[in-house]
Length: 319
Image (cartoon, rainbow, N blue to C red; front, side, top):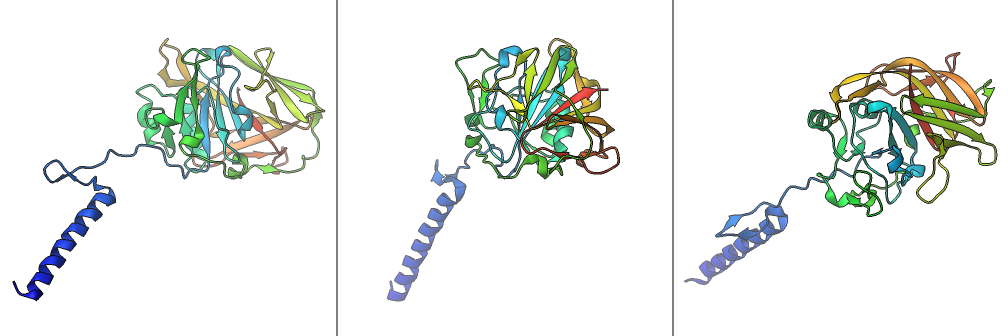
């Protein structure tokens, strides 16, 4: 073989070897099994680009106290089957290392979360008829089946009250921006007026909440079903602002395993609200034109309602 031909042959061999190496490193899984390429399994983990993390948290007595709820920007309280309550905790400014106990999603959550820009929704699961709606919603669904490493079972409680989320394993980190501000709520000085109050109560058919103003802590201390609501480390759950939003609650097309109709809370529409901040109650109005719109809270004279800086509880109250 001439020298030039030998050089071309060597170059071709090197090029072939380089191509094989590039193929192996580029995700093709290398060459294996008689020269056939193998494809790695798909990565089903949820995208970590979402600014907002929403976690569905159980709220019956065996599930208390919750872990990480005190770090949420917004705590939504909604009615579920048999007149009980469940919590949707929304995180953005800071995310705790553990959140839970995590429970199943509801249809209400899908409409409620349309206010946020494609949030991540962590939940334990959902009934089969609801799952397609969750998958089609403009959010990042995160059940344990999608990312098992993000969840764990605690040994100090019985199932189903022992499933917890590790947000750092998604991974999901705090954005530094409060989720309430992301949907147009303003933290500012209180509007004029307001009526001094020391306590307000919200009742569901099988659950009730009380919010008591603490001048020392400058927070509304939370009680659930007649007992002080506490964090996992023994502290009191407390809110800077409480919004009691009057809504329509109607039966949905879904039922639980016991045959109870799952309530659907209509968060699109308009109505009255009461805002608790700094030891006073303020009359307010709310309006949300469409699912993709944000909820606007205004004073009776039409000015934007302002809220106290800190954790906000939004409790949906049936009209």
